[in-house]
Length: 260
Length: 260
DNA sequence: CCAAAATTCAAACGAACGTTCGAATTTTGA
DNA sequence: TCAAAATTCGAACGTTCGTTTGAATTTTGG
Image (cartoon, rainbow over all chains, first blue to last red; front, side, top):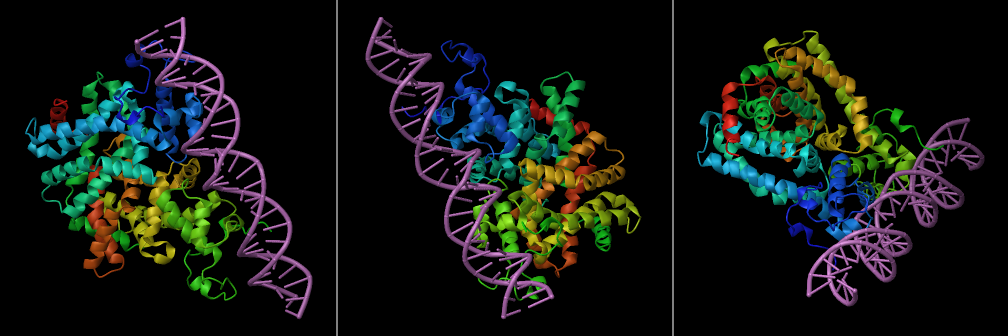
């Protein structure tokens, strides 16, 4: 047998957990986690730190303390390993986002004047929930995602663009409906803007500090996500709602231009 | 002699131009541009497309139609080549940004209620001017810059962080003064957010289309930059100005959370 | 014009890359 | 318990990486 068809295998957490505890036969040499899990954990950390190209198979296998050939045996190739890490986390998150969008569009809990904020919440809450769950990746996955969105490797870009194009389209249409006065061209640019910024900001240390500060003041759990979003969403929604071409602003800008 | 000390040499445009036309002795074999210029042009394009790591010396020299050893001879190393491309463009742009900031802080053309928009203009106008000047890089350089800011290579990050830390600090303080009500923590996150997004957005095709559309309707030249900024700055300033923790928004977000 | 300096060139360096192979070992299931 | 399957392992594959070398060539300056 060449290697197990991992891309179709059931989603399992990367870190040793309840799922692995049952099988006593698996690797008891160096520590409890299986080779697959150790590879996934090491690769996730290295990919988010150095990017796809700069992360070598040897660095992954050395960090994971497994044989060099183990990645090819268990995952087939470096690309399939990366895809596995990305999709096992992101697919469920995307499904959850779309589920919330469905619910909102069905009118559940809809607050029409704050539709934009609610759409933002539908995008963020699943990401924040995932970040809080250490067994599903924790905050490291947000960093990983941030790196992946900015990664220039054609393979990474193609994977993200093709696999999640439909979901992005659905959110784009929802935002367009919530912002009927905004020209399509501006909406497109602003969405591009906030989506890029979301991934890089959530991956940043600043956001991490703010989340930690909010957690320290709150009672913990899901309500802290609302607190964080109440702090974070306003400036995203404000940017989406801003009116185009305000004469007074234009004059102020022209005054700076005159200094050149 | 090993190689000319290029990092200290006068800044010259990458594309063959007036500067090169005078010296008739230089390379007349394949075309008019010198080896250095051909390398710089090819490397800039490849770096912005594939990132630092994924761009090989062989790809650069093949594209530039020069010998493989030419990069090491003229620039010393791949890192020094990258640094040269970045700094010869970015240093003057940063100086111009700071010059505008100086002028604003000295009260020249200051429009206090729109101080935020003017600070944004001080950051953008030099970048837009550079993007319009084909001899100083044109729009390709904005793409290059966008890639560079997102590049995970330690060398690239160190170069950007160390060389332009002071300039970033100055702008951060200026924004803080223009937004006295915003908590320092939020300002820090929002600026991080905006700066990341600026680089990736300006490098995007959406922004390029919008600039082209504005140019098509305008009379060309610098006034188009004001038109673009009048379209672009409002949603940046709106995001910076947004109030934190608005109760009605929080309720709308909590309603989405309840759907989970 | 011609020695000296600058530049170009083909070739090779050692190192690191992702991947593959067959043997050794461990785990599985009847 | 024992053959079969799964996994681990060391070693090597061929390729590409950035860089260096020394000779050939071109350009410079008196």
